[in-house]
Every structure is written in C-alpha cells, then in structure tokens.
Image (tube, rainbow, N blue to C red; front, side, top):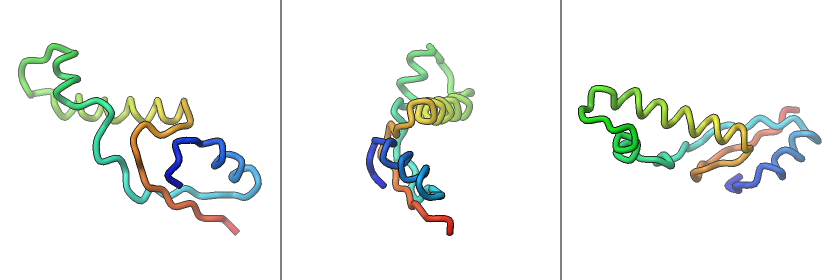
Length: 81
C-alpha cells in the first residue's frame, strides 16, 4: 500500500487480521541533518549520530500519532489466516 491515507488500512485491519511488513523504508528523512544542526546551532559533528537518531524517532512518533506516512515507504500487507 503506497497511500498516505491509513483509513483504508484501518478498515481492512478491522475486518481481517492484517500484518504490515516494511519492505523499503524512506530514502530520506523529512528534515535533513544539516537543517537540524542549523536549528540546534551545533558547531561540531560530535553529536551527528544522536541528532540523526532523534530525527528518525521524531518521524516515527509523528507517523504513529497521525496514522500517516510523512515520506514514501513500501509496505507489504499479509492476511493472517
């Protein structure tokens, strides 16, 4: 399913047990590391790994709360029979 609308998925999940499997995650995050470093006013790259992990975590939290994908991703839905 490549839709940014999770309402269709939610209706399928209520009718049939559906297991979503992530095939290909997003190629990029919605905010780049350079943008976040500028926003946080970081001068050195000592914290780049942490900042990158926090960007990903923030995207995952927003996607879960909103029930939508922020960046294109490929999923495979399988029915549990």
